[in-house]
Image 1: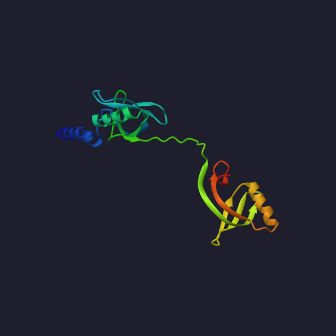
Image 2: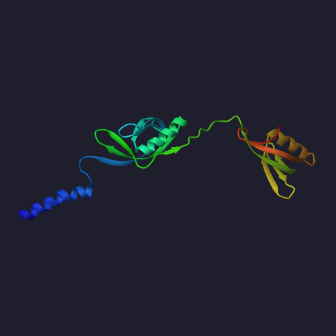
Image 3: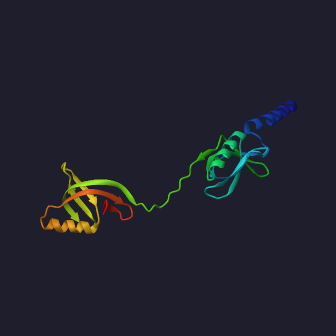
Length: 191
């Protein structure tokens, strides 16, 4: 019985670490990182780079292989404002250490600016106006091929079209129009 208990205890001590990993308190967890590259140290004993996270604005040191860090350094010297993203393994041993899981991806960060240019795509409009609503600026016109077309234009122009239609005049529209994003309707190109 005693041999059986000793054998079971030995098996337990040997098999549990194999089944459940290292029981020394080391936690291994995968994370994703993304942020602006701040500093690179390829000459350290374990090369690393520092980035400022996009969301939290905290800095993280991520240790990586020499080749990946050297590639980052070459890009960093030519362009100062670069962003990196990738995966890292988080190892918690008396502090927090991040190790690359594959090479970091260098991403181009685009900044969207509110441009002074509000001009959209130009659209050629031609036909006879059938209806005009000055309240909404909506007009209905008949294209040369027989299709109906709809266009939202300036309310004053729609008012003028409606008055001419009420006088039983033939009202035609012809020209290039572009959609003005600020005004929210089509405007005659060049006027």
